[in-house]
Image 1 (tube, one colour):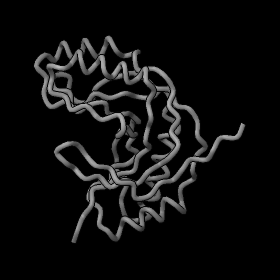
Image 2: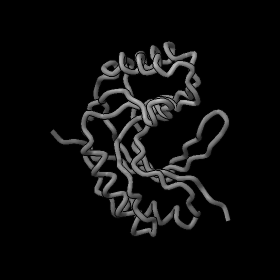
Image 3: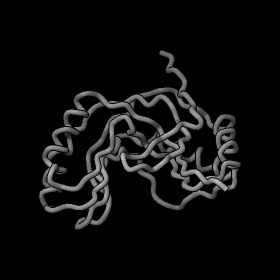
Length: 191
């Protein structure tokens, strides 16, 4: 039986100022082995599901369509850049958000809907973030942290997430290919 790698996420579009800061960080860390995420693939992972049978794909999509309370579009302030992993061997360069309410509410709903499909909740902390790059290895760990610390405030601004997507993810040498299986648009905000 064929199995698919899946996750549920919120795509995020960033502004030119963000891309300039990203470019500067990439130049400053160009001697390090970091796989930088293409900005077209930026998203907040609400829930990584992993191996999913074709039978479950439809059940998950239906559950999301009928059970998710779609929020209104609202701006979310970007936070600070940081890293995940042990201090001596960080694994990910990421950017947080100044406000987590939207993402945490979606996470709670999605976890409940997935449980109704037979996929148990995962007991681990959740922090909404954008993965900027995956660290393969560092030559100069101290320099890496100097760069990250000096750029903590450079990734500023507000993003306006407008949809939740159930994705199929196919890993390829040139980077993952994300195929939307189900897309739920956020409601337009009425002023």
